[in-house]
Image (cartoon, rainbow, N blue to C red; front, side):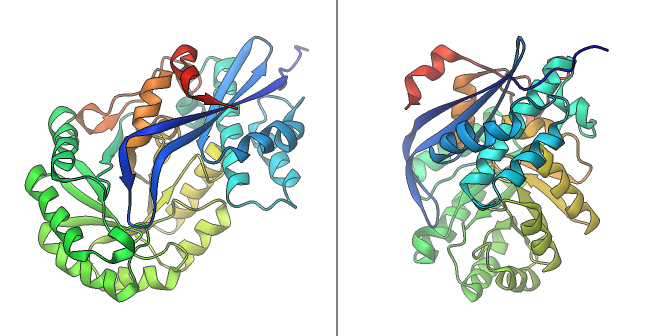
Length: 368
């Protein structure tokens, strides 16, 4: 009997990338983004995965998670995932712990694909060879010139059929500017491109309803986190009052979170983040929960990590082609996918996730 490949080594690297200009949404401002990259070795093969989270992930992965999976069969990704979840019982699943699990899980899927010389999308089963995307950025810190330039790239150079901007500025304290920016966006993109907005939980319930009614004249199709994603009753209230699709879910760290959101009838589409929810293994399960309720799913950020798993689920809406993560992934990975024409196309000729770290380009941003 041939010896089964096992997990031999887990290496964790931390990188911090400054933003290209000041960025903020309705409830938070930031000046850099941290990526935790995991490399898992089996023999001569390496798999890579990553998350966008705090540097504390490295300590968790180096210690408890590496200990949980070392020596396990590479092919049994679900078994490794279960071992990690059991091992972190007393640490708590949500937050940094789940982000750390996500990075390891995606690296395991990449490694399995490389060992089998098969793309991850084909391991899962391809439903959508073309994965729809939407341009995402439009930060509240942008002035009119920056907003116009970004929108022009999305709909002009890349020909994206849908775009999203941030609203809810200063926790909903500048609604006039929010509405003005929505109108500007519609002016720039024209009548045929779908317009999405994201308040990042910045409004109160009734305020969100009022804003939703006013922005209807700009044919906004997607209202993300009009109120806090923890306020399931509030999300449902907004959803019941407006025609626009109400969405949330990016802060879901486990399957139960999404099941509660579905049961509350709080959203029209579940946003699921493969770098937070528990990786590819859990992302597929969440999509099944959504499908059972007649809901679609949308991949939140990290477009190159989402492309393969998103291609495998029937109820996919689209992926978020997020400005910050696009800059990073294009910079540090060979094999980063293009959104040209409004879709990403997972490479079905390359094994695993089709990504390789460009060490020399990433090195200047490495910390720790």
